[in-house]
Length: 223
Image 1 (cartoon, one colour):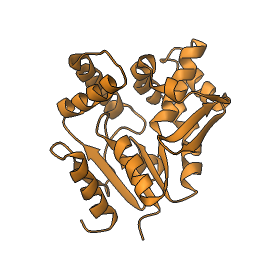
Image 2: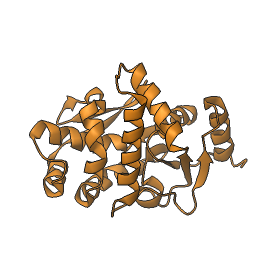
Image 3: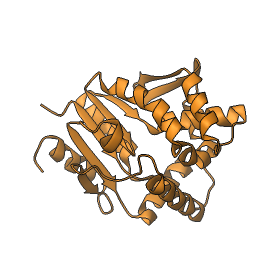
């Protein structure tokens, strides 16, 4: 029997969302990339003119918003905010630029934690983020931490953006990934780090199919 709750953490561009969605489909599990919840609050802040530095106002927005995560056959989820399907809008450049700042506020994280745990309580779920194994689901049956060098992760992110029609240079993406790493690892609440009992997977030199094989070996217990 595969683990009923699987937590996948890692820095920006480590491939955790791609692997998480693939693994959920492979196992027939639900999938949640918790980063979209912080993107949702960032989206609300931008629409409402709330500064991303105002933690109290952002936490209030998170408490007041009706955020619903629904399954989707292709991307794994749809995010509705106050009844509006905002999924595609959550990946706009303006949201990308502000999400790590928003996610660093303890009040925002506190407001979103119950929603994440309610989803996990259903079981048979792959949940992806930066603090799943350490904070959101410390009792997850399997914890994975995906990692790669900053340069490699920036290259992957840049290629993803190009496929979506993005125009940023590789140098701009590299600077952005480095800044997000600093914000994520240095924040006072739930900093990015592997859980003590997480299996760390270095994806630097692994092709996607090799990475999938490695993940399946871990899931099945053949480490």
